Image 1 (tube, one colour):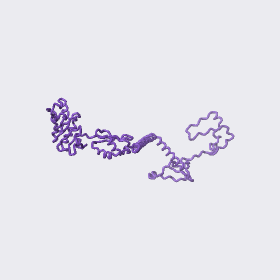
Image 2 (cartoon, rainbow, N blue to C red):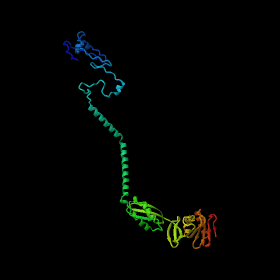
Image 3 (cartoon, rainbow, N blue to C red):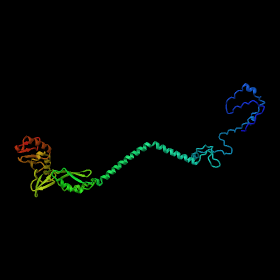
Image 4 (tube, one colour):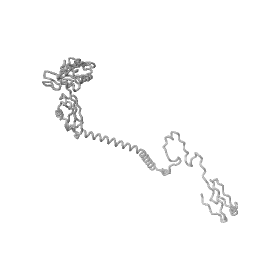
Length: 357
C-alpha cells in the first residue's frame, strides 16, 4: 500500500475516516460542528487520492485450487496413504530450494526430541515402579542372607570345628560301657555329620548284649551312643555248659554253671522251637517280683508251659502263651491271697477259674 499524499491546502477540516470494511459496525453520525466545518462532498478529494489509491486485496483461492505455478495435488489412494511416512508438518509446508525446512526444525532436533521423550518415559517408569523394585530388593537380600547362613552352617558343620572328641555310651547295665567306648575310638576326629553309621554297627555287632542302638550328635564334639541291651530269659544246658540266651535265642554268654538270677530253661526242640518261643513270651509278661522267684521253666509244646518258683518248689501251670498279660495279673492276685509257702501249685491256664492246691 502506498503512503498517502499531502492534503490540499484549502482543506482545513479533518476528513472523516472511512468505515472499516471488515467490520460490521455502523459509522458514527457527524456532529453539527463537523458538518459546518466540513467541505461539500464535491470539494473533498476522492478516497483513492486521499489514501494513495484503492486497496487491492488478493481474491480468495477457491477450495481445492492450487497456488499459481504449482501443479495440482493428486489425491492419494488408501494403500498410498497407509504406506506414506508420517509427518508432523502441514500439507502445505514444503521445503525450499536449499532443502531446509521452512519451519526451522531439522533432523537433529527430531532426534533430540525423541531421545528426550525416551528419557522421560524411562523416568516415569522408574517413578511408578519404585515400590516394586524396593520389594524385589528386600526379597533378594533376604534370600541371599538365608543362603549365606545355610552355606556357612554346612561349611562349619563339615569342618574340623565340629569333629568328634568324645564318645559316650549310655543305657547299659550288664554290658561294660568302657569297652564299647574304646571300641568306637576310631570315630574320634571325624566331623559329626560324617560319622559312618555302618562302621559303628560293625563294632557293636561284636557285643551280643546289644539289641539295638541309636546315635546322637551333641555339638560341638560329643557323640552319644544309646544302647538297648538284650534281656536274658534263662540258661540252656549244652555240651559246653550253660548258655545264657534272650527271648530270641541269641547266646549272650556261656558258663559252667547256670547264671545267677536267671532260671534254667528246658524246652523240647531247643532254641527256635515253638516250646522255646512260648517260654520266652510267658517270661516277658511276668511282673518283676514274680520273675525273680522263677528258677526253672519247662515246656514240651507251646501249650504246656510250666514255671517253678524257688524256695518252696511251687509249680505254676501256665498252659499256652495266649492272654499271658491277663494270666500274670491273676497269678499275682492269687499269690497275694495265698502265698507260695502254703500252696503246692497255681493253675492259671484258665484265668477265669484259678485252681490252687
